[in-house]
Length: 139
Image: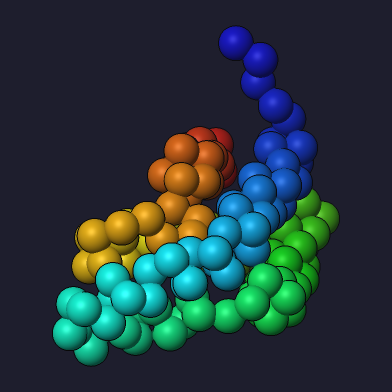
């Protein structure tokens, strides 16, 4: 099996996570329009709160994601530059754990709404397995 060098595996995380962000950006508008009546019929404050978070146009959602991308890129850059340091490992592992929590939120939102939520598929099939792979490599 091909083993990536650690610094390459760490940089690849930025690409993997951006694929997840692209799924969200591409699906968010259509999803919000399609699920509005479903959410309103549930008569659940939590469901409405989740729907309101996702009820944005792709442009607005992409602007939110720029901050995430810049933060993730900075943390990744620091980890690669100081690959053997403990502080960079703690910072990067902390970010990876944050991403795992983010992925759990996608699953919980889907359970509450009982329908697909933007970013679900890449969370489950791409980002989570890659985060687990990276955690195993770093720890």
